[in-house]
Length: 399
Image 1 (cartoon, rainbow, N blue to C red):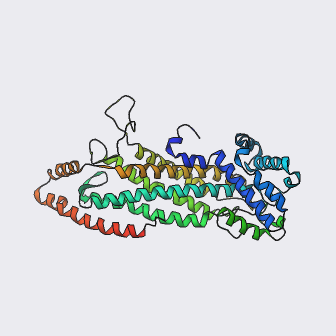
Image 2: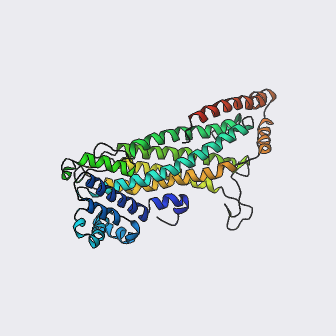
Image 3: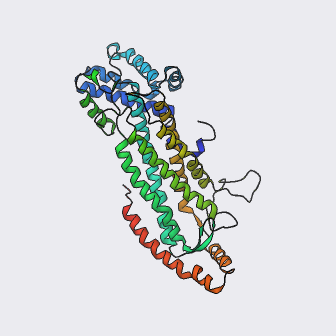
């Protein structure tokens, strides 16, 4: 990851998909595999204990594992080699049972699912914070008149409350869809070399069930090595959420221009300062969300393109997919966190909203001015806003 990407995400998500985070997830897979196989009588219980005890990420040289993955073609291969060596130091007989009956993609896909589950919990929490802030603003400013703008030009009067509802509604729908997609996609991967689990002597399904329960992932009922539909559908939902957040950020940035001056991001020392202009405050939260919205479509397109995976295990498309995935998740969380931080303190300038309305109204003849810029229009919009806030609150699941 370059120096220019870190501030577009969050420390948590960067860590989850960093070398330490992914290797830790892979080791969790190996420990769960050994425990499940021992429970099903496939390997000795003592061997499982030795393997699980060795699956501590701090015992391994993560940087070396990552370096060696370039030659091996998968980060799982040097990881399994290092784990086998570590187990063999204390229990040579157990070393031959490491990774038994599994394959490299099982380890990587499961580690990605575990990292993604953590990231989705953080994204979900930040989405809820952003939604709650918007709904609070909608209630507080339900009847506040503001110019509605179409094709980037003043059109008529609406209310700030209804504008906030229009921002919040796609986030509520996205929040609901994202949870549903995650429930389907966050699955254990365990298929063995060709998806049959034949090396587990008829106990493969039972091992898979035990592992899924151990790791808190869904049991897919089989291998999904080249069945990427649910996984990519989750990625598409992340892309849609990022676009919805970007729309809000774009509106806030436009409304915050000095020439408009109707809303603004909260101010704090050092935030958004320019290097040479002391009067300038850049809308940093909007910048992060807009950058994410620019990058997400390419990541989603990469996931869709990578669905064309050959036969039972893929050469090229899988590797492209797992490279794109963290970038998408990190952008989505960076965007959600930025707006969840900025929206609760959004600055509202009702006087400037009134001035901008009067400026446009003043250039019209009386009848047109009353038709398009009457205060009654804001009241009607406010009534819509209040009704929709109640509906959105009812739909929002904050569990």
